[in-house]
Amino acid sequence: MSHNTITVRQTQFKPEKIKAHYTESTLMSHFLTALSMSFPQGERFFVETVRNVRDQIHDEQLQKDISGFIGQEAHHARAHEQFNQLVQSSEYHLKKFEKAYEQEMIRLRTLSQRRQLAATVALEHFTAMMAGYMLQYPNVMFKGLSENMKNLWLWHAVEEIEHKHVAFDVYQQVFANLAQRRRSMRTITVGFITSTIVMTSHLAWQDRKNTLYSPAQLLKNAQTLLGLTQMTWRLLPDYLAFYKASFHPSEIDQQDLLTKAKGLLAN
Image (cartoon, rainbow, N blue to C red; front, side, top):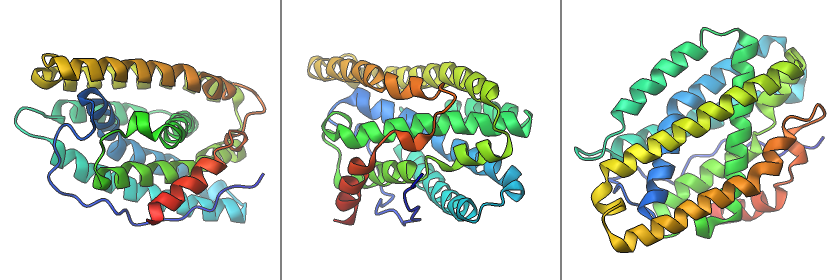
């Protein structure tokens, strides 16, 4: 199966003061911030789970891909950490979630290496699906985004798609346990969706003056809610494909989206 070249890029994103609302809809801003919240710790965990078993990989190309994967994820963690720090204010804070997330990461690290890597594989499937969606429907996801913020999300989405096969291939070569892969996906699905909804709702409530009490925003936010529901339905076939015994991330073709997005990144 042919894979994308994994290029470790520097982001064009410049850490500077960021408003809590950086898209046209305050709810979309809160949703993206909730996602960003989980990235620094999550992506460091992904790297760890692959590193744990790296010495058992004898495929030269996959070893190269692992290096690319580690490089990309390290950059993502750093950029989102900067973003998360800059978006906080006295009225808008993510600290409580960072703590809860830390606890969850500590718990995950107590599991067996197989279960840790299976969790990574499941989460990487989510990030690849959402990255593809962002690239396919930028007008829904990125409406009103400044050039600087677009650079952050576009860059992250491109690289998630480039390395989407890495953790999966490592898992298949080392463990190849289908029952575990499916089990982890079921657990991660509940955890990922619940935590994203809880965090987004909390951020929206902290910002209720703009998110809930402004009639103009309420309308935009209702549209966003509809858009996110639509996203769930549109991604369902890709999500369910993961449970097939023969599944491989490369069978979800995101090549055209990737080429187009890379062109935008270069501008």
